[in-house]
Every structure is written in C-alpha cells, then in structure tokens.
Length: 196
Image 1 (cartoon, rainbow, N blue to C red):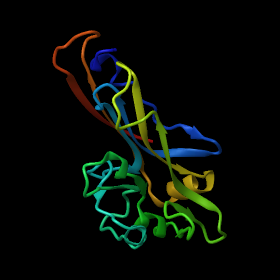
Image 2: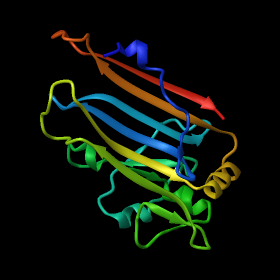
Image 3: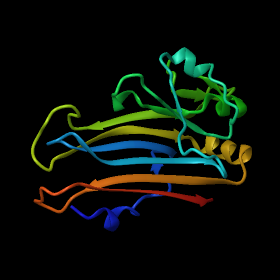
Image 4: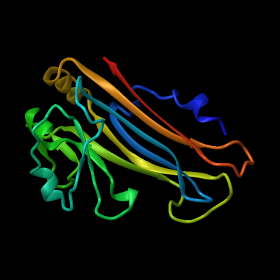
C-alpha cells in the first residue's frame, strides 16, 4: 500500500456519469479484515466561500428532508447525520433549499430526485456498494460504499446560473501503514478548494 503522502493528492475534480456529471461524492473504503476506514472522500461543487464542505443535518424521514430550509442556500449538498453510529445512514443529497431556489421540486416517487417544472430529472443521489461492509474478510481485501449526487446537463447549467463564482472542494482522509507491518496506522487529511 502506498504511504498517505504518495497517494493523498490523487483525486478527480469532476467525473462524467452516463449523460450526467457527478457534483458531489461521499465515499468510504474499508479494510475487510478490520473494518477500519482506509479512505474517506468528500467532494462537492459549492459556492465560493461556504465554510463547511458538506454540512451535516439530522434527518430521520424523507418528509423532513423535503421541507428543510437553510440560512445558506448556496450550499449545494448536505449530508444526513444519523443518530446511530452507522456510516450507511450518512447519505448525501442536494440541499432542498438550493433545489427550490433553482425552481425544482422533489419527485414524489424518490426523495433524492429533483425535477424541473416540465418533470425532467435534474439532480438525484445514487448509492453504490462493493463488498460486504460489516464482516471480516480476506486480509488486505478492501470493500467500499458511498453516494454520488449527479446532475443532468440542464441542471449543471442552472447551477452555474444561480451561483457564480463557485468552486469544487475536495477533502480526502487516508489511513495507511507499511506493507506487512504491525506498526501504527498513519492518517493524513487534505482539504483543497479550487475555483472553477
């Protein structure tokens, strides 16, 4: 495994997802032997001087998410703060206050999908998982899970109209230790903001 200082800066600013663009990511990679978090990635498009990369808000029902209001609707993405110590409940989604500012409404069939006035999909959250998260597995096997918030080309254009200038924030926290070492794990976290 690479040392944290050799791999910490290898992050992408934005990636295509089918016809859409990923505007936010919350990903956890774990060591299957110990379920230790090896990497936490938080990436989001945001207004230029938003102080927190992805603010945490305690939602327990989709209804509370839909009616959420914020003093700072320039914050594009928010994250659920679960009352249980379970990362699987820490989903991310577009900030409802910002979505309403764009003139979008929530899809009644999916609380993480927002539509424009014509019913076209603008933004939604996708969950992914690779491997079993809570069981110990083969040594050095890595499993992962997380969420992407994806925006259609029309949604991205609307976001660009609503917030200018804006930036992409990237926070990556990685843990590593030398191969076949029983020594302590090293942790390094980097936060980078780039205006786009």
